[in-house]
Length: 462
Image 1 (cartoon, rainbow, N blue to C red):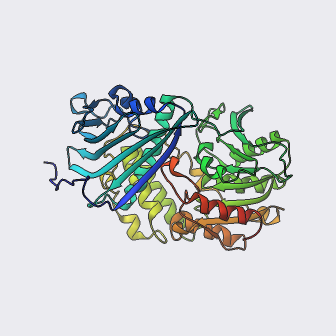
Image 2 (cartoon, rainbow, N blue to C red):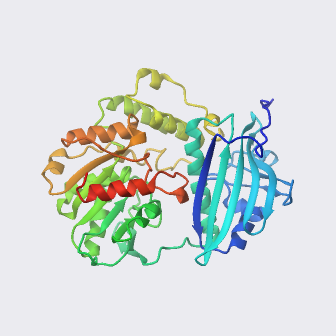
Image 3 (cartoon, rainbow, N blue to C red):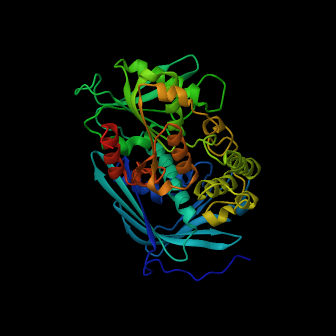
């Protein structure tokens, strides 16, 4: 029987936390409103990547209710399609500008997991729509780690919505280019003129597995700079032709070198984050004249850690959970690893795989086995051993950085250990692992403060 919990009146209760998501959409407010209220459209975009909405029920009136079913490939019979769903009641309907509704996560095993209040604001702006979603959480709260999952979930859902409504808008002055090589077609974006007007090198932003879209907010804080972003091969718009599925830093470094060469303006300044920071370290080791200054933010390098063997076991744990039971189980184990404070102990490694439900994740197998983070496709990234001698000898000024909220976690410790090998201390940046990301990402950090710090570090005022 489902666990019975007191029903929270989300209209009168005091919220414990509020999540704010902002997105610019290339569609009219009317189209966006309809996408939130039309069952046929909701079925096309609701739920994060790897999940679908096989059925949607909408009674669009004050006091009316809705239910949005969740499905995993070949996992749930049609008769049980609402066994795990999001549902609620409509409190305000002002087409096409505003919706207010409760949002209750429910499954047959445990009943209501948690309750939220969702306010959707839709405003016409610059020929499109400015979308703002405010989701308020109340006691009893989901686990803290699940909040990160909620943010990522919104980001992935709104990506689906963008594709449903049409191509996402580009900033004025931005153009997309394609570099065709024998092994991949690499797509990159150029924001601003080339050659640059002020004579400074372009600022190249590199991520992995994140594509160019993840730097949209950060790039907007550098209107005086020409900013380059790109999609790594096999991710986003960059198509592979090499028949491989793994992500290898030295291979990606070759791609970034090719893009820099195609720009035709010489060396660049570079900000690189997560797996992109690993790519950047491989780039500087192989092509030291490509980059004048590199800010490498939280490279997730296992070999530099004193507990590297234990970290590999922790990585294997979330990979095995994913391969055995799918995305929910894998992500739960991944969250447990990446949020763990300090070295990975035998106590941590002996713990059973967390229940995905405690993070607001489904326990059913979604059928996927190709996630670039949860599978072993990116193990070459976290297993990369930086060439310290080549990095120290390079003319590039290298700054290893970590977010203040990441100190003590896996990526924060890896950044500190990498910096130590290069004879420096990690430079502390505001916020967390994605601290440069805005509300449109669903994993908002403190992008304005982050950009100020990055600007100071790039100019040497550190």
